[in-house]
Image (cartoon, rainbow, N blue to C red; front, top):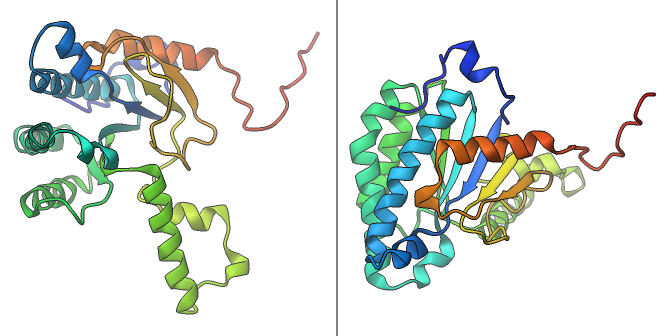
Length: 252
């Protein structure tokens, strides 16, 4: 189903794709409200969109796909909605893990696990262990994740290393910080997409997004299709990425 990396050249070579695409999956509740449906239905449709977009990303040749599934601020939502979101994560892993593994998808979950239920942590660890050596699409799910919390935790880890005498404070670099983040070993996203029309990062990959291109889609996440993903990538390809440098002069 997902993560196929052996698509014919005509499929993957027609349009250059970013190496790493990250998506803020927003709009499940509003999608449901527009249809006078319970918000839980919107979240379930959101999971279906995860399946479709993960499959499409693998077929397009994207190497890394990061999905913002549950933020550390989402605990402030109604208890029944939080419970439903936790259940959907369990369902996704239990139902799709074997197929993800079969298709060579490597699964990695980033975020704080300390306050998650033991059965969820066990499922996360099972998914990561089973798929650790897979080499096709790398699927990163940000769950109970917040960018500020991530950076704060990285600073704490570095401080402990300094206190123990293993790191010289004067030798701390940007690479040092990056290596202590949840995303250590994962390249920074080239493209960040947010659905639903909102135009903010909402505490997502704050360090890693320094030079990412941002594309905002007006469609709600359950309606975000492979065609919309291609449109976002086409917009990315129209951007002039300079990483802080000046544009190259146009040759006459």
